[in-house]
Image 1 (tube, helix red, strand yellow):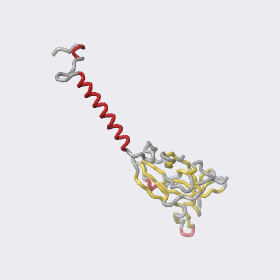
Image 2 (cartoon, rainbow, N blue to C red):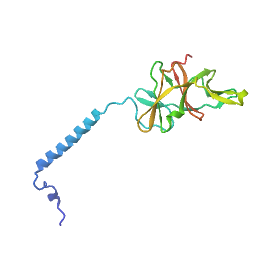
Image 3 (cartoon, rainbow, N blue to C red):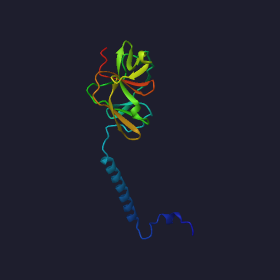
Image 4 (cartoon, one colour):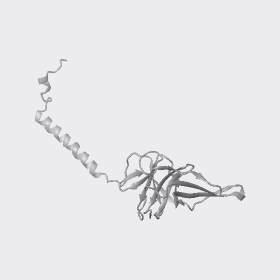
Amino acid sequence: MQPRTSNELKKPFPGNSEGRFHEYSIAVVVSVILQAGFLLLSKPVQAQDPGPHEVGIVYYADGREFKAIAREIAPQSGRRNYSARVKGAHSAVRLKTGQVQTFRVCGVDPSRYKLYAFRSEGNFRTVTIAKINIWIGGSKSTLSESEVPVTIQSADAGCFTITPKEALKDGEYGFSPAGAEDVFMFGVGDTNG
C-alpha cells in the first residue's frame, strides 16, 4: 500500500461529500456543547465548599465556603481541677450570635473531637476537663458540663460535618481531639472589650 499524497488526503471519505462531513462535524460539536451545558445547569449549587481540606484541621462555615481554624496549644494541668488553658482572652475567629454554626473535619474519627465551652479569665481562656478526688486515690471524673453536645454527619470526600445540638451562646469555644493538647478556638458574638 502506497502512502497517500496531500491532495488525496483532502478528498472526502468514499460515499460522503465534503458538505455532509462538515455538517456531521458541526452537529457533533453542538451536541457535546448542549450536553455539557445541561449537566452544569442540572447540578444543584451546594452551600458547602467541597474543596480540599487538611487532615485533622477543624473548619468553620463562612457563607458558602469553609475556613480553617488555627491550631493552638492548650497545656493541661492541675491537681484538683484538671484543666486546659489557652493564651489570650478571646479568639480571633468570631462567629455571629443566633446563627447555626457548622464545622467540618476530614480524614479522622470525628467522634474524637470534643467541643468545649471555655471561660475568659484575665489574658487566658480556660476549661475544666475533670475533677480529681485526692481522698479516693486520685480518681478522676470527667466533667460533662464543659462539653457541648454535637451532631456528626458524614459529608463528601472523607469529611464530616459537626453541628452543635443547640445554638451556641456568646462566649469562647474550642474543639479538641481526645487525648491531645491541640485545640481549635473560636468565639461567638462580640468580645465586649
